[in-house]
Length: 129
Image 1 (cartoon, rainbow, N blue to C red):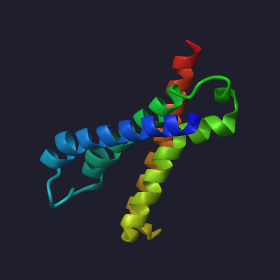
Image 2 (image 1 turned 30 degrees about the horizontal axis):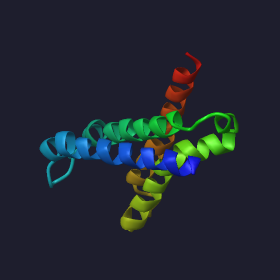
Image 3 (image 1 turned 90 degrees about the vertical axis):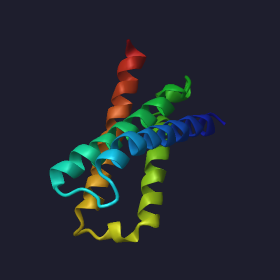
Image 4 (image 1 turned 60 degrees about the horizontal axis):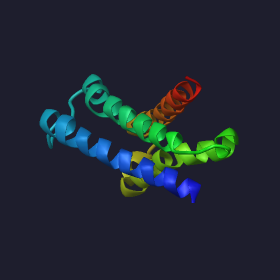
């Protein structure tokens, strides 16, 4: 049940933060035509996604209680399962992104890894202080 609670918190934070990103950033600034350059995609899509992943990882890690926090595998599963599942869902729903020649695959994977690491770092900094 402990992992389920962490995952539920992660899902809620990820969905809410992605919704805010889509309504405040992506919808008004990008529009239906998409972005025109790599810099615009980075600033308007990937960096906000990184923030969403980091927040979801951090929130899930924060509700993971002792003594299970000290078991690294359990803590990683509690904190990072939701963003990883969201990545798998994205790749399942958009099979065109699976092409290794496409930068979207590498950028979304980089966002997942960096956001997860940032969320875990935020959790560790908050837990030790």
